[in-house]
Length: 502
Image (cartoon, rainbow, N blue to C red; front, side):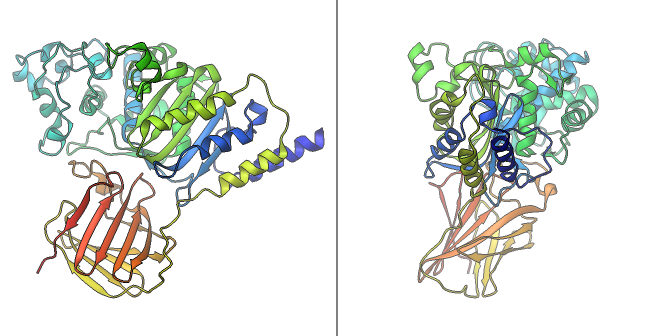
């Protein structure tokens, strides 16, 4: 028995190549989950709908399985999109605990410089709580009309018409979360990220993260945080354990309870069957303070294209997923179908063979570069580009395996390419991103890690892939004769055809 236990532990340790992790680890079986069930769970995600980048599974406070799909890695940040909202909510929780504000405070009271707007319908009634619960009262989310065109997002939000009494109707509202971040900066004199550092990040041993800011230096709140997989796990553990981390009360338990409880229904008239079995059932369980309620008594932080902190109190478990998913409901359906039944109340017998198989499975995860049976060197050729939404002016490929992208400001960005595999490097060019057009300081976060690859589709068609592996996304560039197109992976159906410039 001792020999088997030693072997089990040794195999487990060998399964982790990244040693700079701070969370405790255990084997799946020791925490009541079979290794085979974890493999089955991950294999349940079909590659035509889901591109997984990492997962981390925690049971009873210990990491029992984790993997990164190379070139994604444990020490790399990942764009979290709306999981950022849960970090912003946490900052509000600290501010409430320090009596810097209350959730009943009126939003306009924090911005006396915009008092001229006070007579706009319902604006004077808008509370911090309404921002937290996505019930600001707008008929349509104001995000894009403000962040692209308005130089002052606070005023843009406050000036946007409110059609319903605040607190009465759910409408997902990313700019409402930005307002929470702006309020934090107003009452503390610090950005949300700086405010969180001594209160949250340091106690959780989180470092090296960043967050986009608007033109006035306000962290954007509703998106834009880039953190590592384990950083997400630590926030999940903090909320699962009612504000405690490593035995210390970091965040008040009362705030955790309030933030993760249901405050509003997304669709009040939905039938019980729709809430239990509908395609978007996990989006109909109620909404807290920037946390979604989920089926099976769970709750989560949730970001576009499949970024999740899923906390399961009944199972004493946290699941982290980073990915680029085209089927968000199926992301969670796979959890309920293949992972939830695997949680057992007691430890399972030692399973050296299963543990070894899981270790090999996790170690073999990778994003495969596109390949072709047609092997040929790159030509040396330039493409002068007409007007396009990416602001690219020229593509140039050369026989040395380099793509040079010239942007409208005449800056040249070089990318290394490998045929049928990945060449990695760093670039100052902002990559594919759903909010690339926003007026933020993302370019200041450069350099960005990328992996470059090319293949020949046929004798005339060259396909280049640029994978930005601190984000969920990649570009696919197609060059055929004088035809040029680019596809953002987050909207594969929308090919950007770029005219040639004479």
